[in-house]
Length: 373
Image (cartoon, rainbow, N blue to C red; front, top):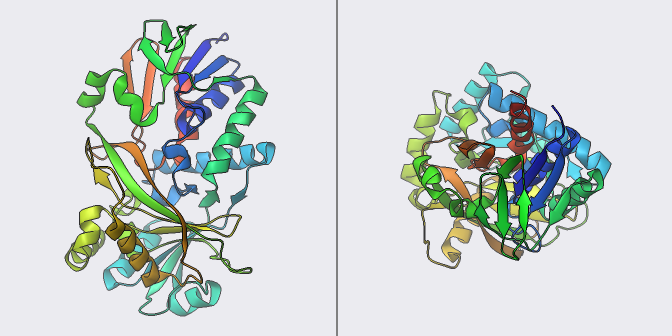
């Protein structure tokens, strides 16, 4: 395929991975970003590359490809990453059953009895611990620095990035921007995050997509020498991601959690703890759905998150240095990677189900390869 003019709306992780992949394929690539820098969900997440949350089959293969690509780019672009894996801790009998069923059905995972967990991971709370599942594939990056570094890497490859350039109109083969310019394209990729609804709203409505708002926090740096040792999750998270849905005990665990923790269920709370290069821990999160949500964070939600964290982790310093909200689009029918083609040569990519950092590289590869077919 000869070089094509590729235009991308959005300089978040989906836009940047598409830009790098298209440029590597020999295309001319331009990104138009509304804001002066990436400010959306791409920098407001845990930075966890999360194959363990992906359904086995093509989606998990895509996730593993994403981890591989991130590591390749990290080496070339100087992006910090920590490949220490994840630890899913079980405190309820049903959760331990889920992990045993999951481990028995799938390879490349290590089931650990409680005593072994505490020996290897001193930050795990031993009280009531039944055991854990260790997965080696999960990796942490620091999104607020990784996304700008990825943008710099894209520029080095020859990608043109125009920040502060909102798109106001999409035509058949060009777009108009707020400053009066027109950019022509052979292929347009719209990866505009929550602003996707400004483009082709009827198609988005038909795809059954809704905004999802989350609350997250970051601690102060932990004392010197403290190492969480892996990304920590526990019982609540086993009911959140697609990978565990096929385990017979997952429904039983969900029923118990909804009865015991109704407020967590109401706010969609499940808890991840990820440690970064500066010693801080990123903690969260919650899930509210719908348009026109009231402004402001809910302090009680932060308390639910911190309380659930202490059930499975011993953290030396839980002082919170920052709190924030993130909004991304999510499928109402459980899809990840909603890809729409509202008209010829236009691709809309959105609703990654909270797995955008993990799945975007594989999605970008599939998008660019589709132009050859």
